[in-house]
Length: 172
Image 1: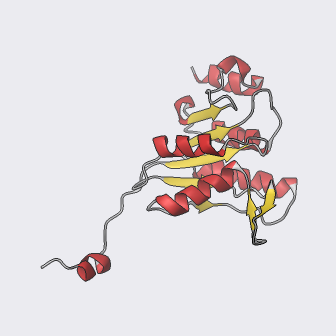
Image 2: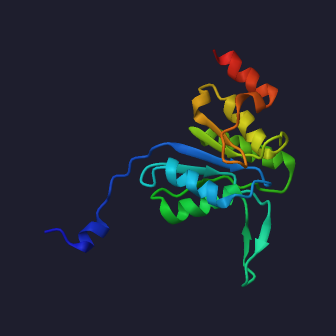
């Protein structure tokens, strides 16, 4: 006989799907769009979010509790609330560029696909650093990289930095 207690105590076999790195510029402000993309892209039952837990845009709520208002943390919060698999989070150990680059490399390494949110014409950010590590992986495939701009469009190839276009061109 199947009882609620048996169901709770039984070992449910989980299958792991795709590991999605979710990163974004600190200047990207459209939380609603980011959540919409996560809802429409990620399988809550199987996929895993990989994040760098950015310390940018620190805020405090009405009760004095600190939170971070940025893409990384929105994705982590969404995954913690809705996904069966908890997110993989790579914290920076200290607040230095070297440490942020190390963290970005880990996010790229652990992601099968990368979803980035960057405002158009913003070509310098830690998000581009993560993209650089991601496209230099041995098994890189351009279809595993999605970059959205603030107008909710995927970046046009001609607007990508030259080093990204060169990498894509050399893949052919």
